[in-house]
Image (cartoon, rainbow over all chains, first blue to last red; front, top):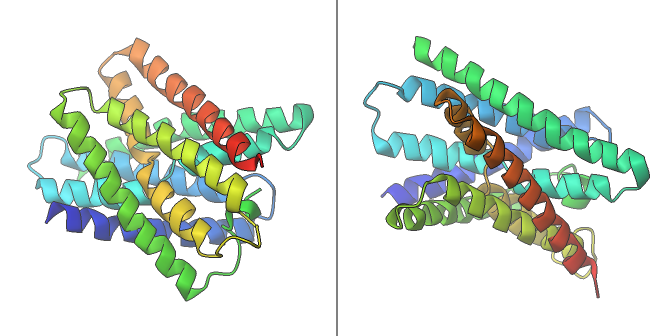
Length: 125
Length: 135
């Protein structure tokens, strides 16, 4: 049962990522991968929120697995982030390396900060 | 660069279906890794580290080998790259893990875990891209 829920929510998460990332990339036509950035940062905020809501409460495992491992896991992505960074680094010279470094640092710092924000908000509920 | 990942091309129903089907496979695959790591009593950080590094390696290979190539199925990147590998790897749990380490005051791991994940993940993706791009 858990597996079916995780699979179904994983499918929804991946679809949402495909939609959001594509929409952001069309809106913001630059070589910087804003689509993946927006997806991952909203995913980190959502995961922090879920953790904050679950803290000190008895939330069924099925809900946590479905929303956390399934939807948010399917929605956010680490592999695309890494490959886009490699492609940026290989796009040439010092500019490429600077872009790659930015693309590593910005999501990492902002991701943890947004997860913290989500956690704090989640605890209010 | 995102064009190579086919993230900004027109979205057809078949592509969406491929992304969703791949997303289900990837999420279940990650849940299976979590189960295995849980059974070995290793810290669950290792399951996140493992899926993220393996996923980066394979995605690098798949993108270098198949993205924008006429000999490849147009559904391959949406299914394997965006769907399976996108869902198999995770950024949201990665972020909350770092947050939890910092909140617990485990500063050494709060710095080493993300630094290690990014360094090894980047090298894995680079290796995959090089390997997939060679004849």
